[in-house]
Image (cartoon, rainbow, N blue to C red; front, side):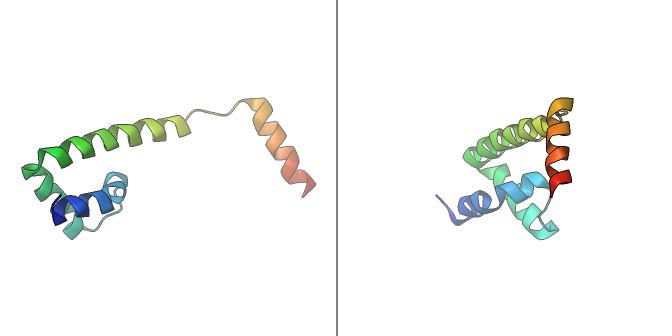
Length: 75
């Protein structure tokens, strides 16, 4: 595993989340152009991230919201 592969592994989550500076974004993107393993890894990680974020957008049932709200009212 090359130093650039390790760099991708260290920063893939920030890259997927859009939290990297332009220099690091370029470094990741330059590397995945020449490394099929990192390109595949990053693609899979991006899909998993997208699905996970999608789950967070599912509204909670009203009963759960009411239960949680009542807990905060007691504090």
